Length: 163
Image (cartoon, rainbow, N blue to C red; front, side, top):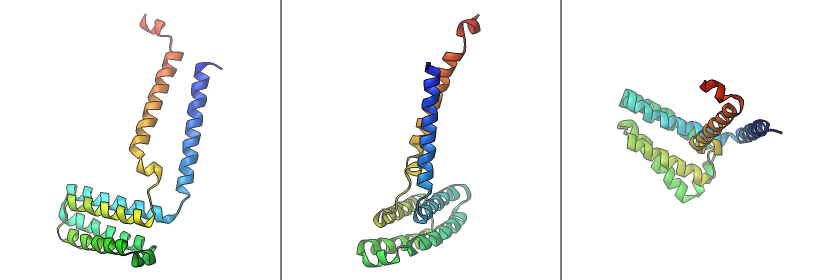
């Protein structure tokens, strides 16, 4: 087996393993999906604030507050009986109210951190692929760049090209 065949086999195995892992992660519960959507909405509120101003950010925060209410309804008993989570829930609700009156980027980031802390306290975490997406994309890009480089070195006759 030559180097090109080994490289192609290796890339195929990595792609199959990655897609299998992604399918396993996507098959997990709706709590994680609700949490991911909530964080996306909060991040969208920051983008909306920067692009369109306070009024649009307030509307996006209202949507995020509704999503948070749905998310926490799945864990109502756990939040009620854990004083730390109950206090954090009260702080999050107060933060939503204050940010709808006068939104700010730093305030929305604080809210995102509080929501993440609440989810961690409830045992809900983001999937590995979502949490480390930047690193995964960088790794895949480097692997593909290296493989294209190796393929071009193997296939192209550079002596003929240089003539």
